[in-house]
Image 1: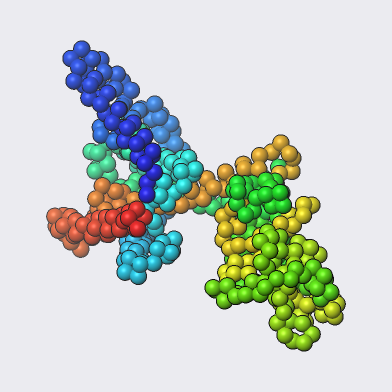
Image 2: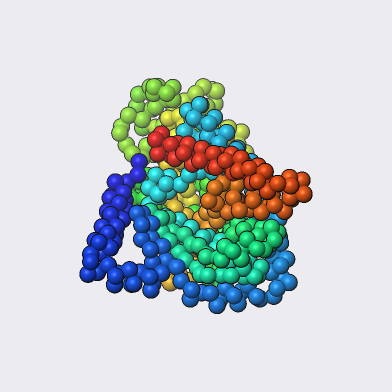
Length: 494
C-alpha cells in the first residue's frame, strides 16, 4: 500500500497551492498583479500541474544546433533510424509485457512480478521511500536530455525555437521545448523524423553512458578506492541476525562465505544463492573432540523431519549429525564455534580422512531451508549465522569499493552506482514509452512523419494515410493503457 503520510503530504501540498492560486485569481485587487507576476516568470498553475517556461536558454540551444552541422546531421540521422526501430520494437516489448502480466494474473504467482520486462513504478509501494531522490533525479535528468535532443534537432533543421520549460505533474518532474508549429509543418517528413526521434535517441545514449560509467567505475575511482579483495560492509540492520558482538560491523571486509570466495558484491549474492540451493555443508571434526564437547540430551524429530539433539536452550550449541566407524548415524550437541572454528568444510567422511583418519564430516542438523553459514571478515573472528540465507542477504548492505583512505566515504561509490542504475532504467523506459505510437506521445508524430515519408507514393490520398495512422495510434494507445492499468493493479491491489 502507498504510505498514508506520503499521500497526505502530496495531496495537502497541491490543495494548498491550488487554493492559493484560486484565491489570488478571484481577488479583484490582486488578480492583475498576480497574473503579471506569473506571466513575467513564465509560470502557469492548474490542478496537480505546475509549469515554467523561459527563453533564457534560447541562445544556448541555437549555439548547440549550429555546432558542426555535418556531425549533427549524421548524429540525428542515426537517431532517426533508431527512433523508427524503437517505434516498432516498443510495440513488441509492450505486447510481451502484457502477455507476461496476463499469465501472471491467471497463474496468481506474485513471486514472478520481477520477471516482467517493464513494470509500473509507484513510490512507497515497489519503490523504497529511501531511494526517491535517485528516482526523481533520474527522471528529471532523463526528461531534460530528451527535450534537449528535440530542441537541438529543431534548430539544426531550421525550425524556430521558442523556449524551454519544466513542469511537475503530481510528483513527477519533466521538461518540454516550445517549437513554432508552422515551421515544423513546413519542413520535409524526413526532417520531422530527425526532430521527433531525437528525444528517444538521446535517452538511449544517456542509458549507454550510464552503463559505461558503471563498467568503468573501478578504473575511474582507482586513485581513491580499490576493488577485487572483498565486499565492504556499509550497513548492518539493527537487531538483525547479522548484528551483535560477534556479528558483522560497518567497514568490515567480507572475504569468504563458507568456502566461497567473495571479491565483490556480486560474489556475495552468488555465494548465498548457491548455499541456499545446495544441502547444508559439513565440517571435519575429530571424533574425540565431538565426544568431549558433546552435551547429552534427548534426540527427537522436528515437524519438518529434521533431527534435534540439543534441549538445553543454549544459543551457542548446535546439533550435529555424523556417521561413525560403525557406519551408524550419530548425533552430538556441541558448541558450534568451538567445534568448527578451525575445521575445514566437507561433504563426506572421505573429505576429512585425507587429513586425519579420526575425523568425521559432521553436518549441522537444523531445520530445512535454514543454514549454518560461516562468514569470514578478517582480522575479526568469523561470524556464524543460522537462518535463511535470504535473511542474511537482507540484513547486510555491501559495496565492492574499499576506500584507500579513512576520510573517504564508504557510500560514495554506491551512490554513483545506484544513480546510474536508475538513470539506465528510467531513461530506457522513457525512450520505450515515448517511441510507442500513442496519442500525445512522440510516437504519434514519429508515426505520422514515417507514414508521410514512406507511403505518400503508395497511398495517394492524405486522408487515407491519416486514417491508417489513426488505427495504428488507437492500437498503440490501447496497448500502452492496458499495460499501465494492469501494471498498477498488479503493484497496488495484490
